[in-house]
Length: 111
Length: 110
Image 1: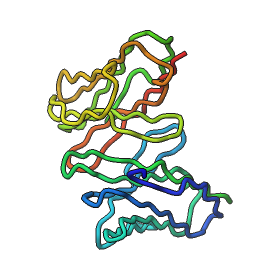
Image 2 (image 1 turned 90 degrees about the vertical axis):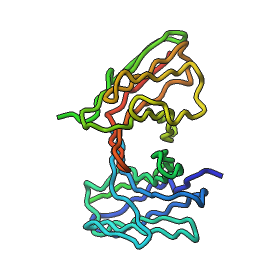
Image 3 (image 1 turned 120 degrees about the vertical axis):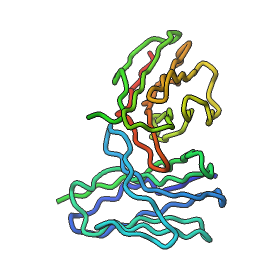
Image 4 (image 1 turned 135 degrees about the vertical axis):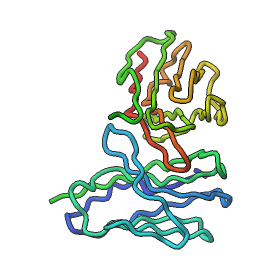
C-alpha cells in the first residue's frame, strides 16, 4: 500500500465549478499535512497546510479526518488558473520535515 | 530574487559519466533537501541536511553523494550514471514546516 494515495484524475471541469480531491495516508503517526500545487514542468509550491479543525483560504478549503486517515481539498468557483496537479503531502517524521508526496491529482479547468 | 536556485537546469549525459548538480538558497534556512521526481511524477525525498549535518538519508544508491559546504548550499554528485537516473531533481529548503523548492534539474541519461 502506498503511503499517500490520491486519485490521479484528470478532473476536467468548467470554470466556476466546485471540485473536490481526496487523499488517504497509511501512517497513523503522521502529524502534519499539506496540499502542494505543481504546474506543468515547474516546481511544487505550498498551497495550504491542513489542520485538524479544517481550514479555509479564499476559494480553497482543506479538511483532515485523523480517524479515517483522510485529507480533502475543495476548490470553489474554479478558475482557468487553477489548472495544475495537486499533491497531497504528509510529514511522517514528527519534526524532521520528511515529506511523503502523493502522486498528485491533475485538474484541468476549461472555459 | 531567486529563493532556491539550481544549476544546471538541463543536463544530458551518457551512461557511466559522473555529474554534479548545485543548489543554493538565499532564505537563511537551516534545512535543505534533495528530491527525485521520476517519469511517473512521484516526488521522493533522497536526502536532507540541517546546518550541514545529514539528517535524512533514504534508500538511495551510494553512487549519489550529497555535499553541504555551508548551510546555504547543498550539492548532489552522481557517479556512474545509469539510465534509471533520468528524472527531475529538485532541491528544497525549509525553516519550520514550509518547504520551498528550486526550479528543478532535468537529467537525461542516454
